[in-house]
Amino acid sequence: MAPVPSFPIKVGHIDDVQELNKAKPTTVPERFVQDMADRPKLTANLSSSTDIPIIDLSKLMKGDTDEHFREVMQLKTACEEWGFFQVLNHGVDLNVLENMEKLAKDFFMLPLHEKQKYPMAPGTVQGYGQAFVFSENQKLDWCNMFALGVEPPYSSAIYSSEPWIKMEIFDEMFGVAVQAVRMNYYPPCSSPDLVLGLSPHSDGSALTVLQQGKDSTVGLQILKNQTWLPVQPVPNALVINIGDTLEVLTNGKYKSVEHRAVTHKDKDRLSIVTFYAPSYDIELSPMPELVDEKNPCRYRRYNHGEYNKHYVPQVARQRTLDFAKIHPVSQINKGSILDSPT
Ligand SMILES: O=C(O)CCC(=O)C(=O)O
Ligand SMILES: [Fe+2]
Image (cartoon, rainbow, N blue to C red; front, side, top):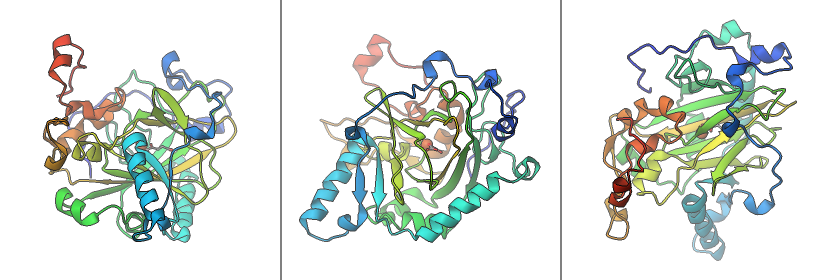
């Protein structure tokens, strides 16, 4: 599991959002009201051309056919330009997904004292509690989270659905890979325009698979060209996104894209997110075959466990990966580099 901070973090009193919501408040407590610039604009009416790519895995598996090559090209575009896509015909048994959803819902509906038997310590993302808590002064997300390491069959059911991922290559590079599941429950919020369900972040994994609750409203948004685009839930599809590790390994060719979740006035939402990441003792750097004169190395070599220590505090600043980025000399001379957390 992820390293736990060795120093205590002062975070003040934190209300449980489900309990808050039970009291049907008409105003949102101040600690959940985002600063003006961070509030979501929920009225944007976007055309379907802004939908993230959909990959049909059954076509991807069709040997040497035109359909196969078209799908491969779409997958390439999805990884390089979007960092996100949805997969259909993924082969994961729908019963596994249904059971997982039921399990997650049942957990969140337990009395608070039951859920609090597995408390999430500030500065970590393990157990039950508030996401990404690192200070007394920060704004809080309108979300309850339960995160844990997982074993097969759920994790292997999810990842074996992705035959385009050459698991043997990852096995070699990642050591004993870390697999974790995060269940996010977003109760309705009387003022969804003032709060965030989950703050903007990119995932610290290599690859993330996200399952949305069956009747989920739109909640997930991704940042593309400085615009937050909603991800429309597609029945039985899984959402896949590239995490920071793959961005580094591909020397930035594949994008680990910032995303966030927003809430709804009347409806709750559930997401179940599986992360696949290297072992914490692994050193990462771009693959040599993706570094050349035209594509200079963009990330310094770093230890994945070290990177992980920066993850929660850095979510407030949105890009943990900045800690490994190599900035072009021209930028350094202009003094435009954000201070590095290391
Ligand atoms: O709930 C969602 O749609 C987003 C969840 C997410 O990004 C995460 O858990 O990392
Ligand atoms: Fe995420």
